[in-house]
Length: 479
Image 1 (spheres, rainbow, N blue to C red):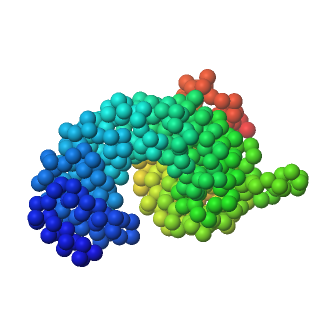
Image 2 (image 1 turned 45 degrees about the horizontal axis):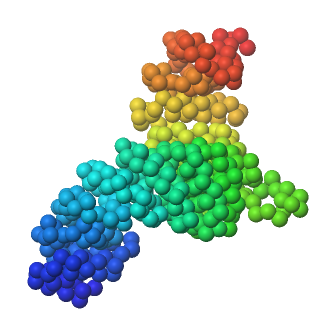
């Protein structure tokens, strides 16, 4: 490495041809690629003198050389900002000479480096539209992934065109391309029914070739898009049983989230649900027990959002026979509560309540954290958390802890100060109000609840009407 660095430094000082500068940069990038090397190599181009040399010659670079140099920066995971900006402006200047691969590569590079150079992305999108028929499947997937990663919703029409063009090249679409395309469509909520149907059919055919991350991405994407393709999600579940050990924590969480979201009929949510029929014994089926085992082993690597998605899925599928895993999750969440957003806190507490799993250290941590961040909760999160605390109280003997009652009262009061309550949220607040022994509740709080419920009565579902009626009756001492 040091020899290469010295050689490149000498080369940079000799004012070489631009193509030689790019070749030297590629050598450094290829030698130092990989996350385990980036921490010590991000300034390698600068140390070799190539960054300064390239910056002084940017105006001489051809479109392909700009693309290649950007790739070097992206692979190394770091970049001199001045050089990256100059390369973006040169790419814009050379737009007509950009090939489909060059367009896709530049989009990938800037997305990978988290650089939202809007002028460049506008130019890349415009050039893509004009040259779309000449794109390879990998180029289409790269552009789609970059637009989604950079959250460029204004270019959703381009993704629709990409979706249509992919259909013309389905025979050349590989599993990783499919995964990236589906993920991008879901992130930017591009729902082209006809194209997605054909993409789903191809994905289903190729599932044995999919890596674990691709399986999780496709399942998540079709669930996010609220697709009716339960057959695809169920097939992914079956295929995943052979590859669970290679799933990342996020992959596991996304997989079970997708299964819960689609409520696939064929999914077995408990080991006890196994059928003894010979036909079903011969089928490979997804069992939550195996997923729970892998999740328990990887729990320390779960991010807060992964944890919440996973337990939300358990609650939605009523997987209540995994107390050991739930206990581990409760312990971890209690210890790391400061890392959880208010939405995470609300969702996780709601899921534990649905599963009737009371974890006292977790609830104590929730009490402390929620009190401190009360004004950060969104209206629905306030309602869900109040409902969950009341549910815990109803499920155990005796009164709840004073802290839980106090927090529930504050949640209700705070929620009533907002203007975006849903009908179900109002019903949940009313039920929590009547269920919890709220020591400081005033008649004014009850009046506000009753008034909001009366105003939204026509929007309430039957169950919500029942909860509101019961709550009023309980509060007035009628029952």
